[in-house]
Structure formats: C-alpha cells, structure tokens
Amino acid sequence: MRYTLASLASLAAAAQGLVTRGDQCPFHLKAAGSVSGNIGQLSSGQARIGLSPTTFKLEGDTAWDSQGRGCWWTPPTKLLQCDIGQIPEKGWKFECDGSVSFNGQKEFYQCEADNGQYNIYLLNNQGQNCAKVTLTSDGCLPGCPKPKPTEAPPTCPPKETVTVTQVITQGCPTPTPQIQVKVVSPPPAPQPVPPPPSPKTCPTNLSGPYEFPHLIIPVDSSNPDKAPGTSYNGQADSKISSIFNFDIPGSYKGKTCSLVFLFPKKEDLETSDWKFSGSGELVFSKLKGVATQKTTANNAPAVESELKTVQIAPGNGYSIATFDCPAGTAVSFQMKSKGDTSLWFFEDYNPSPLGLYITVC
Image (cartoon, rainbow, N blue to C red; front, side, top):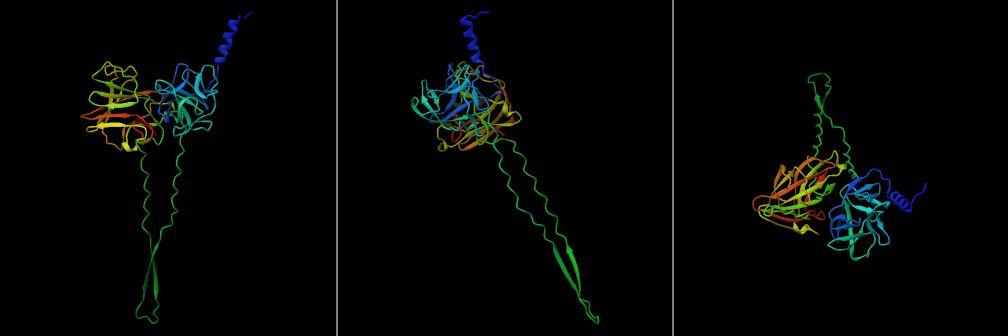
C-alpha cells in the first residue's frame, strides 16, 4: 500500500497533537507587585498580564490552557506560553493561601509589551521595563493545616472539708474526751461550658481561601444600551451600578461561601485607591443570570433576590450573605447606591484588600 508524502505529514502532525491527560482542576492566575492584573492569553497561546482571565487547568504539577495546549517556559527567554502538541513543563505548585511557585521559584518577571499588557518570564531582563511580580491562583489549592488545639492544664481533685467536733462529758469519774468526725462533701463540680457554635459566616478578610471577581461590568442607566465591557473598577452612584461575576471552582463542593465587601482606610492601601461621598448606603443583590462583556443596563440579568443593604465606612469589612458554595458554576451579584452615596474603587487583593470577594470556609 502506498502513502503520499502529504498524508504521512498529516499523520505525523496528528500524532504530535496527542498528549495524554488525566484529571484536571480549573484555575485562574493573577499577578501582583510591580504591576497587577488578571493573566489571559493572546490567540497564539502567549500568556500576558492585562487581558481577560484565561481558565487554565492543573494536572499534577503541569498546566494546560482551556484549548488543551500544554504550557511551558519557552527557551531561550523562558517566556510563559501554551502551545498545541506541547508536553507541559513540570514544576507548578500552589500553596493553600493561593501563592504560586515553579520548581521552588516564587518570584517571576514582567516586561512591558503593548496595549497596556505585560509578558511573563522566569528570567529577568528579557524585554523592556522589566520588574518582579508574584502570581496567585484562585483554584486547585490544598487545604491549610488546622492549628493544634491548646492543651488544657491538668486538673487537681477537689478538696474535702473536714469538721472536727470535740464533746466533753461533765461529772464523770474519769472525763474522757470523745471526738466525733463529720465529713462534709464538697459541692458538685461545675459542668464544663460547651464550645461556642460554629460561625455562620466565613471571615470578612482574605486570610483563607477566597474568590475574586473575574468580570466587573459598570452599567449606566443614563446610557442604557451601552456595553462598557469588563473593568477593574467597581462603581455605584445615582446612574451607575456594578455587576460582579464569580466563577466558583468545583473543588468548593460541600463548603460554605460568604459574599464580603472590604473597605479599608486609604492609609492602609498600597496599590489601590477609592473615592467616596454621601451616606454610604449600598444595596447588594443576587442576579438570576450571569453577565457578559455585552451586558448593558437594558439587558442585564434580573434581580433574583435582594441580599442586604449596608452603610459602609472606611476601615471596615462587611458580610453581605452566606450560602452553600455553588461549586462548578458562575454567579453574578449587583452593587447599587442608595440615597446620595457615590463610590468608585479599584478592585485589588493587595494589602489592604479592597472590593467585593467570596470567602470560603
């Protein structure tokens, strides 16, 4: 049987694309440090800071992108990229706090590209205006070890009180003192106080597992057909409200989630900022559907339920709602102002975290 050169080349290309994969866990990456932002991809598979977030998948200590391309640090510059038919490079490790390392390296390097985007490297000085960044993941995280319980001090047996009564009989030829011993039992020991009930809400901080919004859409009622697309900013005033999308990993099945709003003081911010005036009343609601980059004020999903109205002030964190984690799905929440409240902020989890998050417990 004869094969043409073209058919043999096609078979070779197909064989090259067959890379066996096992169980995979979805996650998103975010950079912080000299620049901050979500990590997405160009159509070529090259990873960049400043794009819409890509859903990567972790298999052991290797990573793939959503198109099944293996991710590696391309030589000689060690640029992060995912390519068709590429066997992914081993070495990824995620800690329980979300921090990411590769073969023990915890700091990476960004170099300026174009359109406000940045390439990601293992090595420094592989491009223009390079500086250090750290990477964090929102999924595939191991559980943090529980603190060891405090040992109670040893308890001593209760004391017994002994009362001695001396009785002397008068007029007897030979007075002999008689001793009567009366043992008084101690009162019953108090019953141990039962431990306090488990908290009904997860922490209003980012000390444990958490999710940041993967899409923020500020819709404008004065321009109801305009689709503003995704933003890094949350906003609420008399005309603009913000919709926040969260992708909940399947690994959160059976866990509890809390929607929290964190509003630190300005002096505690390092890389973020906010502008605020008015009474501070904000209304948070859960939506029936999920927003997209084409969402406008007119076609936004309807409100499923109003969760809570809070009056915010700088230096505080607020628990909005607690619920069973909707593992493996996306959910949308809306933030609207009430009265004369006007708020603008840059969503950022760097110290001190600012914005709307979902904490997990």
